[in-house]
Image 1 (spheres, rainbow over the protein chains, first blue to last red):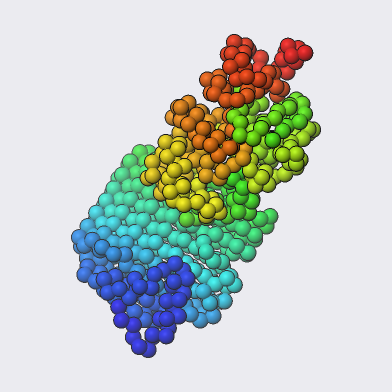
Image 2: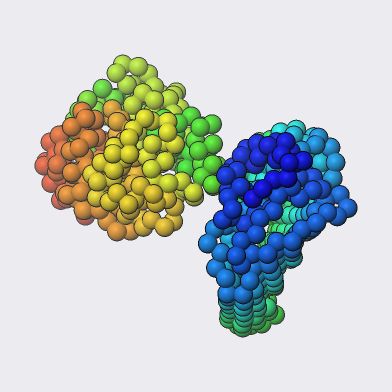
Length: 319
Length: 244
């Protein structure tokens, strides 16, 4: 990928943020890797490879991008999406459309970095269309500023056609969250599979709201939605996991684990299961509470302090 | 030396340990034998300082230092550790990280592999996780490997033979012998007399008191002949009558 000279300094800054969020800048510059780099309301880099077609442009306060994977293509290297905002204050709107055509296979690695923003609202909407027998994985890691002034509002709607597979993971564990609103719903057709996972760690007065919904609308559709939240200090968290069994032999499982640490946390989880077809099976697990005392005792008996043991266990849960 | 002096403990208003006395010398191997429900694991928790198991009376000494009021971590830092009977799982933690305490103890990959080998696990386990993908027996072995890695002075093995796929007595004995090579004092808690045979000294407890203590063969024989048939392991008065 070539970065336009006008944007080379901006890229350097963004690359710094990208590396902070765990990304590897060399992937963004590798010609063999399809990628898009978004800074504020500009596309400062874009690279297509065989089987991947990325179109993108400017829109009010942000960027739109349409990413299409050609029928039957198996993309050997993950597509990298780098979204950043370098200013201290503002709003960024990003609209993605992902189309994975029948029989295609693709992996995405997305990093959203807002390390210097003190008052930013980042709004992302995504439409995901996964064709018959196609597979898409999407790993999304966020890196926000430590001031807690970032608001992220993310809304994804995915449709997975017959025997398609969709795996989505969202991670915001290394920095302050600020305010997070994640909404994701998946419409699963016959034999389709979805695996949704969110891991978030709240600190100070972070505010976390996640709603994941599995629509098991096709025969033998399978889905899992799993959320792991670590809420410390004054974190406020509301997690809703839903599964709707609307088709025969469909199976869904939803799971929410919320670890609390601090007298002022305010957390809740609400599992919702609804069946409209008596051959569908849905299950759920939910727990809220401090770290298991037996886990703590086990690690403390190996000479870790309570703080060290807590951190060790939490890191594992969020890894 | 690790010493329990006149330890009494009530849990939920019920007396569990009654003026219990035990001594454990450096580098020796001990067993605490007894039926289920007699207080064996309670003794382990009291020695380790698990929350809720602080004795109402009595003292615990380590090399003359009173450690009764120390936390689990503080006792562990002095060289006492335990492999609990029930081994919990840890989501997302690799066995390598578990055995090196996330880098807290400075050991090489070869050290980790050696510890795994001692408990009968292959090198491939290094990258596996300490989660529900392990069977009960595998998890138990990982716990023992973890104990080996931290080079304790005193280790309590609470029912090391229990588990979904039981570890063989040979494996346990091999593991204990490896610990003894490090001059570690091993305190094995068990209700199987065959495990109690291979040690230096045995305690037989019943209803929270030391019923008998001494040579392993004698204690095991007594346990086999008396305790197996005993239908009242938790009724303190019956035992007291016999002892007195």
